[in-house]
Image (tube, rainbow, N blue to C red; front, side):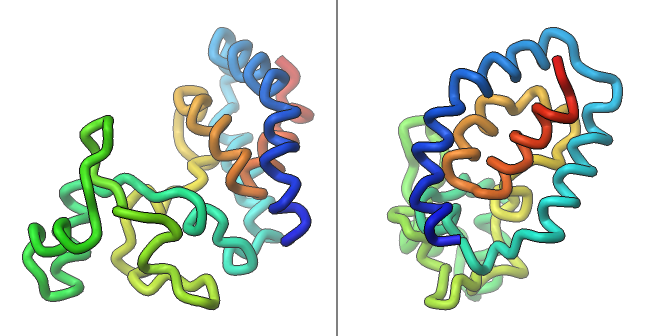
Length: 164
């Protein structure tokens, strides 16, 4: 996994134009069975992918925190939401709450999330490859293939399974 992670940004960059063209075509003519195919590819990939051997998403990017996330996590820490914000978050250029720094503050040395049961929605859904109306998040997916080996593999399989 470590070698693949080192190569992943270059692999994703090399495939970027091909993937972008694929997603552009996909948006123009969305297959009726896209959500079904994506769920199948997602499930198949995550049967063989163990996120604990990677955690690259937690090490290299930070999630967006919704107000519901902030309230839930603050409650978990027995804090007021503003205390949680002050300690862990800042507002980015898009006016979203994000972590003050990466790697994620809540990632431990064994790649476990210390707030797993109350983690942000963005973390629960990452890499978003099983999302309904998948074609709507192609720009996000193009970014995620450079971060997540599973997302990279899913997109490669998707191109084989859905010739557009």
